[in-house]
Image 1 (tube, one colour):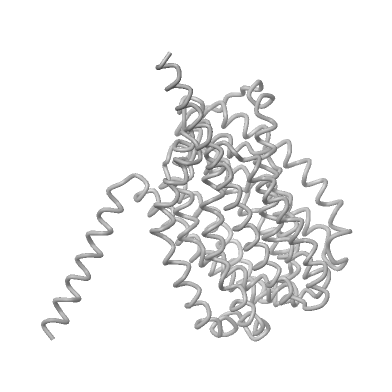
Image 2 (cartoon, rainbow, N blue to C red; image 1 turned 90 degrees about the vertical axis):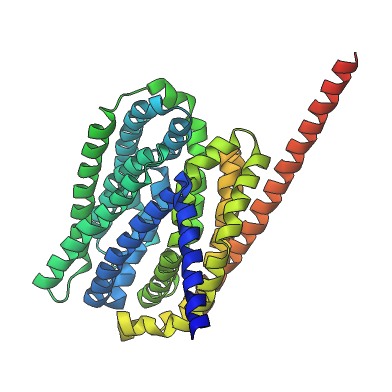
Length: 448
């Protein structure tokens, strides 16, 4: 018994030492802040996710998810990459924050209004006819304007590596939505998708106004530097297209399941995919904390970025492997929590359980490539996978429903891992060849 107690104590001490070492570095502290923010946000989201699923039912929930998935596919074009440009430039020069914050607000509002109009016109073609138009307008205004303003504020804090404030913004929007949906659930036992969409918009509006005031108080009033918008428009577009492609191969299947299969199938598949997103949260927190670091290390080339990213990847790889096993075992709990209508989510979650591992691999490689200045190659890879995902969904979803969408997701993420690894190896070899050539020239000059 004493040996067991001693073993337990030593294990506890080792864990405490490991945690102390992790928290002793800025990256470790920022990761814990990001993880705490995401974790609390997920707890809040889980609460309103269960309320929504039970109040709306599988059909109405599927309709709401179909709308949000369509808008998610378009939302990366809001601001034309202004958030990524803010992080990249402010991470290297803090004095630029007010200029990029002002430019970002201008671009976000202008492009957001334009895209709300566009998505309203597209909904009749891409979404089932029984989804009310007002739902598209409300969710569009929320996710294409107000949520994107809040995201820009989060980028401002992330660029200064102030992940504690970033975490609080993550919690803020979920809290406002939980308050709204809880109030709606108390007033009406069976809510409509239109009523929930109105609450969804109100929560986003409140959160975005708070975020703008917070950034202004912290860093001063935004300034406009229009010459930077013109000079960086192409790079910003590459960021937007890359994120849009990423969103498409993550979310287009939900739209297609709703359109080509049924809203019930869309609800089942979306619920399972939502749980995969939850499981990926710790890795996402680490990636957010390390994102500015990828830009700093990337200034020396991809080889240096790969070394930086590889250290982080090796330390975190055990987590998605553990999650894979856990999801396989715990999947039957899902319908007990969400209701009988979601019984198919058990099988869907098991099919999708490998995604956290695949996402971990390709996100680390992707951020290394981006940080080294090769966003264009990352974008091309993501666009290719998005096209591949859409094409095989056209074949698999009509034939196999949500199962086809799950198989498509696994295939697409696998293809993306292989493509990005190939791109990274090619760039590294190219950089090594340039380095060898430069060394040879230097030696020749010295001899002369």
